Length: 179
Image (tube, rainbow, N blue to C red; front, top):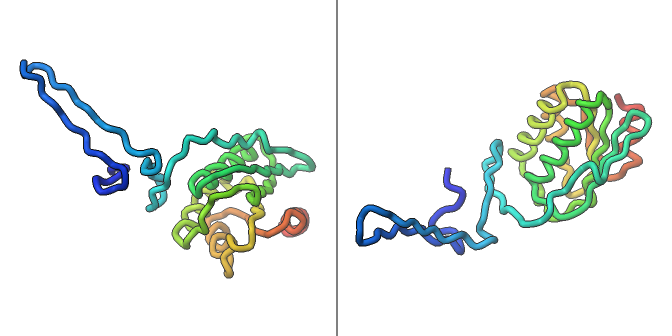
């Protein structure tokens, strides 16, 4: 699958130029404008712009206490990047046998509101990653929570115990008594 089409803004077609000797072919490919550079998430139908930003390292924002791993990253991130950060958090907990994860995404900016397909794919990835060994609570801004908590329902159907809240207090309370 092509990462960018010929009609993408800033895209230029590569050109092959033959030298007069005919034996050597020189290929010139002009790069895409940075804003048009795209990546394809393996499980998403959506192309997302890449960035030259330094990747967010969850270890810089992680603390573990009372069998709860708390991750509070901040910075600019796209939807695919945010999903991957949560994947890494779940993997971190599973590998170290930490049973509960509270991931506070309120410090991340630049993430679009996920549609239903995005929510389904996120839940599917996280359920697969947790393997029934990690309970997850997400803390996000209210506009990211689906009115019927669609992603939470899908995740539960796939074996992931999880919920989503707008404050750490609510999330921690659920982690403590809700499971």
